[in-house]
Every structure is written in structure tokens, then in C-alpha cells.
Length: 234
Image (cartoon, rainbow, N blue to C red; front, side):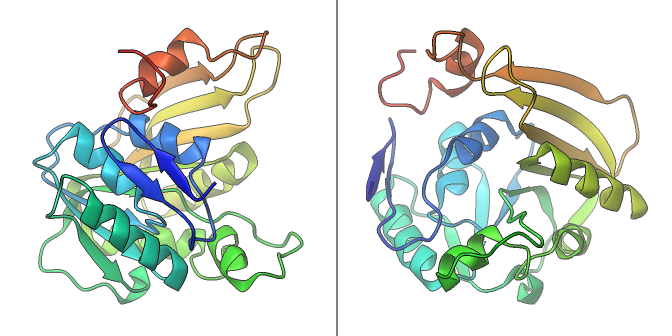
């Protein structure tokens, strides 16, 4: 599918290696914006997360960083066609990013394949594998561009999520919110939505099931995502 229509914006994705996914939509809807004024979207791809955050909080100043040329092409179009003209797209690796101020919120739907069989398509490999952005480099980017009250939100498969949690703890980051995502009620959790912060405290444990036993979207998934999906009523 070369285009994905949401309620308030459209995603062109003819050139990006990674298309719109349930993972990205979940993260964009679930991440807590709170009182954040500045946000950094690492590996924005088509720009989905940046646009979802902007819809939720139009006053939020968002910098979106992307390395892959095809994704940059799509993100440029998607930002230009949206109703929010102050989105900043930086065509660069986040490791090279230089900004004057730290961010209140950093969000990412990061690559997570470490040593699995790689796709012959270079762009898709870059998007899916950690070669271009390892977990340690993502954490380092958050460290470099955060302040004492900043938060980091991301989604990963559950096995990789535990690896990330352990790496984050090594630099003093605490897991503040953790949502285990199930595809159906009888299935084990397949994804972890996570929010990290520098301030230690009690972790909020959550769970979410996407589909009912009959394959329909669950009430909780609809409640989370209805502001975005075109065919979900408010």
C-alpha cells in the first residue's frame, strides 16, 4: 500500500523501506506527551510518529531525524501535506545530530534485528536491523539530548525489550511505564511499549490486547487509536 489515510493526515510510503505498522500506531497513541514542549523522533521513517504527536499536541515542537533516503523523500511529502508546517525533518543519522536545547520527549520505533537473516534490500535491512542504530547508540542519543526530566518512549518485541531495559539501567534510566501488547487474549505478549526516565519511582504496569477472540479490534485498542484510524468512530 503506497498511501495510508488517517483522520487528520495522510502517509505516502512509496519510497520508505518500512511502511505504516501497528507498532508505530500503538506507540504514537500510547506515548505520554504530558507537559513536553520539545520532542525528538529518532528514525522517523515516513514521519508517522511525528505526525501523530503533532495531532495530539499541535504546540509541540518536533524534530524528526531520518537516515534512509527513501524514507526522507516520503517524510518530506507527508510533512508538507499536513496541516502542521513547523515540523523539522533532519536528514541525518541521530549520532550526528547537533541541537541547541535538550528534548523533553524522545520517541522511537527502532530497528531491533541483531543477527537474524538480513533482507537483500539494503534500505529494508537498514530500517529493520540495528547496524545503523544499536540499542546502545539509541540510549546514547537520549543521554546526549535529554535533561533530568526527559522521557524516552519506544516499542520493541518482548525479548529485545528486556535487552533494552537492561542496557538502559546501566546508564541510570528507570522504566516508568511498561505495556505488554497481546495480539489476542489467548496469545502471549508480543510487544513491549516502554517509557523510561531519569527519575526513579514506581513503574506503571499495563497491558493491551489488540484483537478479540473473533478477530475484531478490542474496545481498549479502539479507545487508544480511534483518534487516528479513519474508520474508527470517536
